[in-house]
Structure formats: C-alpha cells, structure tokens
Length: 350
View 1 (spheres, helix red, strand yellow):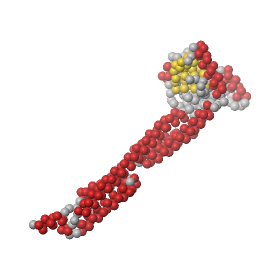
View 2: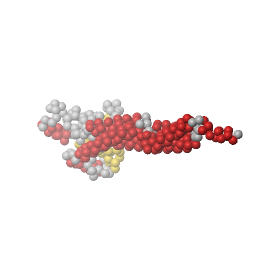
View 3: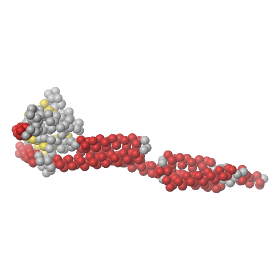
View 4: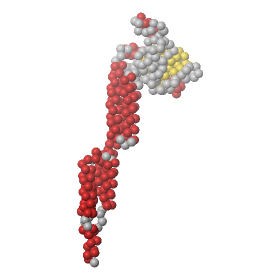
C-alpha cells in the first residue's frame, strides 16, 4: 500500500491550467504591443514561459512513475506573474499613449478654433491653406485614434499643431502690419469727429471696425450694441472703384431704411457712398491710372442682412445676421452717422 501511495505522489499532473494562464497573459501583452512598449519586462516574461514549457516537456519524457512537476509548477507560477506584469505594463503604456494622443487632438481642435477666428481678420490665402491642412490632420488623427492607432494619431496632431502655429504667426504679422497702416491717421480723425458729434448731440452713431469684423452702436459715452459682421470679399483694402468688392472707409450717414421685401438681403440701411472725399480720391486714382478708365467709384453700399456667415462675401457692403439687423434697425434712423474704419486705433475708443 505504501508503494502505491508513493507512485501516485511521484506521478502528479503537469500544471497545464496555470501554463494556459501565463500564455493568455502574454497574448494580452502582445495585443497591447508589449514587445515594443515594455520590452525588458516582456522579454523576461517570455523567457520565464519558455523555461516552464521546457521543464514540462522534460518531465513528460520520463516514465510516468518518475515524473516530478514541482519545479515546473514554480516555473509556471513565475511565468504567470511575469506575463501579468508584461501585460499590465504594456496596457499602462498603451493607455498613456491613448491619453496623450487624445489630449493632443483636443489641443489641436481648440487651437484650430482660435486660429480660424483670428485668420478671419486676414485675407492671406496661405494662412487659410495652412488651416485647411491642419483640419485635415485633425480628421486623420481622429480616424487613427478611433482605430486604436495612437502613435499615428499623435503624429497627425503634431503636424496639425505646427501648421496652426505657422498660421497664427502669419496672422499676427498681418494684423500688426495692418495696425501700422498709413491710413491710421484718417481712421483716427474720422473716429474722433464721430464720437465728439455723438457726445455733443447725444446722438446715436454706428462704428464699423473692418479688422475686428465688428459693428458698434454708440450714443454719447454708452455702447448700445455690438454685432459681428461680414465684409466685402475683395479683402481689407479701401474701396476704390465699382466692382472691386472692397468695403469703403470713411464717414457716411444712413439715407434710407429698407424693410423686408424692399431689398435683396432681408433689411438694409442705405449709405451715402460715395461721399465727396471718396470722389476726390477716385479722381486722383484715375489720373494716376490706378483704377479702370471706364466705370465709377461705385454705389449702393449698404448695411444689410443675410450675414452671420463668418466669411467675407459681399460686394463691399457690411452684412449682419437677420436677427442682428432687426435689433440694429430698432436703434437707428435716417441720418444716423456711420463711420467705417480699417480698425479702431488703440486708445480711440474704450
């Protein structure tokens, strides 16, 4: 009886269940890219698994009565622990890359929003091109992120962020240069005269800042309203002749208030462009050959509705959203002064 008990003890069973656990841990690690993300730990785990498998094979070659699996059990236990460690480290590294890629994409999206708003104040097509390419990088990164390709997502976010940075630098340079425009003296003169008139007469006036794409309604020392506007698709220059699609700059007044059905763009405030200063400038440019021989200085400049498009699209008019036009019409009347400048110089209006 004692011999039978000794034989049963000697035979035992190979720790196959534990071996399967170690193999599954290594499979999880492989799925998380363990070899690349935790190379040393996963190499040690793979070696531990190989030693356990080798010990089991050695014991299986022996006669059944002489097999000993105690060493194999220890090796398999070590392999399970090493495999779990490999999988955990790989998953942690993968999660870190996921978080970093997600944060980089979110940062790019936020930066794009800021840069797009800033670039709207510039006519530089290169800036718009950079932002378009950055948007494509963001979309590419989002797609890669969704597929679990976090490194590619991070790379795409990096490319997009660099493009946005270049666009912002170019936009800042344009804005700084525009603020140093030789026309600043005229803008300052017009603004001071208009604001002084408003204060003396307690009269409502309209100020349009082309660079900021902003229309202000002011009465005395009070700002009654502020609206975002779209401008002429020609760019930021001062209107010179009919058809150039630039928004004019100068001191004007409302000559007519048109209701829905009386104008193409919902509502309209007609302006007295061209004024005498505009005509003098046009004649001077014509003598210098800087405007077409045929045609005039242009006309039919309005503040009208159908705006709110966040892009410049008019033929030189100032466009507001229809809701904003409803609000604006309630604040002004025929004769209300309208001053349009390239930008309000610092210190001229607080």
